[in-house]
Image (cartoon, rainbow, N blue to C red; front, side):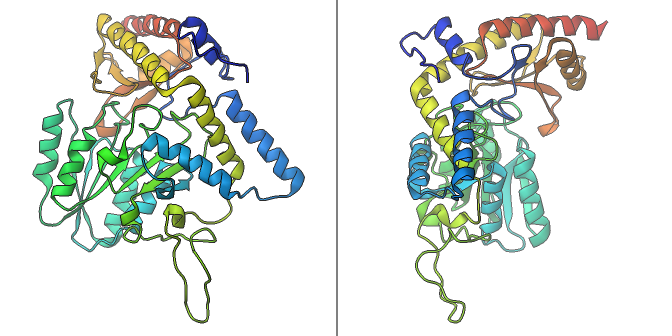
Length: 394
């Protein structure tokens, strides 16, 4: 890796950062919310680790590596390393929580209309299988109204509150701490989908007060695909039952004859089977990459581009769904133009990669802006959107 000059937070600095990514220069990539681009140090770490294992025949399972990476994620989330389990993605974490809770027919779950399909289908399948009921609220830019809508759905059968930290549809940061107080006051299990938060906005699980939090390593953290993390509060380990278990789940001796067995006293109980340990080495490299640049520098860079894009969209008559209470995600539309038509035009004519949003029955495009994007790309994108407005309306 070329040494990044962290003393110059200017165009030269961010140009150095951009050079760390293999992303082709003929396109503008605004789709980190789906998949982040790995910097070269991460790619090299995965490649070198995998090559080493293939040469040695080792599994690569390492308690030291596991602990190092979990401690790094714990610093991002403000939790203990023992409360972190490795998963393949946020959806797997959602499934572990959803299917591990002890719920009875007639119990109710409150969730939002802005859930990613990975969290939506998880709860729908459990509800269908076990006779549960799901109540849905619509998040708004007004935090008090959002909280009021949640409280209005709570009744004596409510057991679970499942929300996104950051809406994958609008980029809105939900008032997760206030919602955590509601969950505590009503004795509800509080689960947060943090797929769009880790690496995108500060996360403090102690302040949020949730019982479980699932997130991904392959989005804003810029780790390799197929990596994720599940936080389960230590006091709730026995109440979120591990339904898929294996060699990493137990502690001490076990015996088929006597039936003796006990879970390890950490979130490691949710890990099982052989995994690609080279991906964990990739996460370690991603954490080092972040540490070298600095979270605050990245977030300030992203906020500057977000503001530039938002102001430019307003100036050309676009409707911007996302307000300043957001992460680095901006959803917008051009009145009178379907998002699919705009999305196709921007890709075919200008190689601008955006995601169409259907969650919450929205008809918008989502731009997720990260450290490899530049002010020049924002300007080019605004020109392209303005051209699309004129051409698609004519």
